[in-house]
Image (tube, rainbow, N blue to C red; front, top):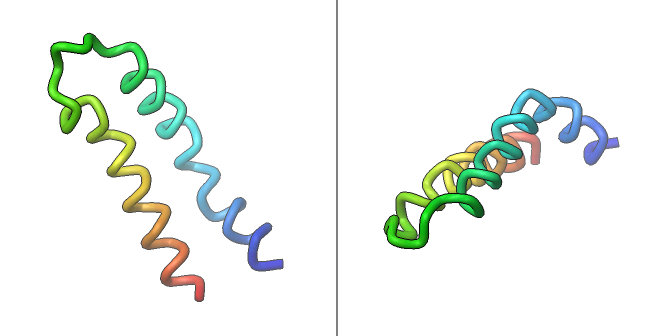
Length: 55
């Protein structure tokens, strides 16, 4: 039940996470890793916050 609720609550984040993944994979390699992965880290932070609150 909690797993399904978590998926439903975070469904709004799915398009952003897809975009962030494409950005990280398709960005030029000369771009520092911190900048390439910043959108993914933001998505991860939001998901961890949701998971922590639901416990």
